[in-house]
Image 1 (cartoon, one colour):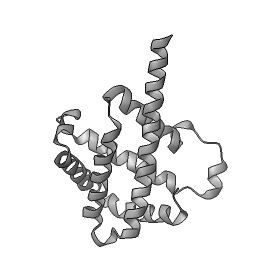
Image 2 (image 1 turned 135 degrees about the vertical axis):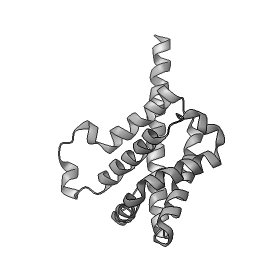
Image 3 (image 1 turned 120 degrees about the horizontal axis):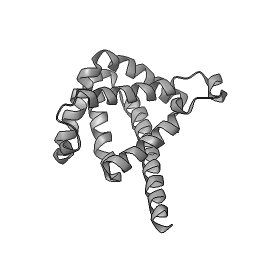
Image 4 (image 1 turned 30 degrees about the vertical axis):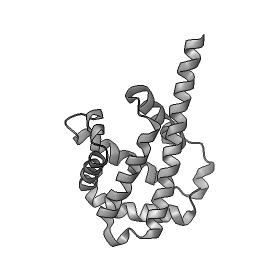
Length: 159
């Protein structure tokens, strides 16, 4: 579980990434394709839209971490609910792209490497630990969405 300090570290470090977000997206995909060259075929040749989607999703996630505590009890639109969005993203990655669970490791590795490159000395061990926890939570939630999709598909075949 993320602590308040973890959330603060992530939010503060993300503010340093925002001015270099295009470069960070370039670095992320460059590193991902170095780690897993076969993943390149899963993406379109023109990567600009994909890079924007990556940055937009990371911005959404960080914004969700930066909510005021009192707002957590408020009624929320499902499209703004971090957990529901991440579950749906996992389901989408399963249904549309057939992304296997083992792909989350290289993606996390590429993300942490990108943050290290982009933040330099600001990517302290404490910041890295916070981002690692966050990514672990996101990956687990996406895998849950993917599993729910597989179970739903299997139940549909039984009926």
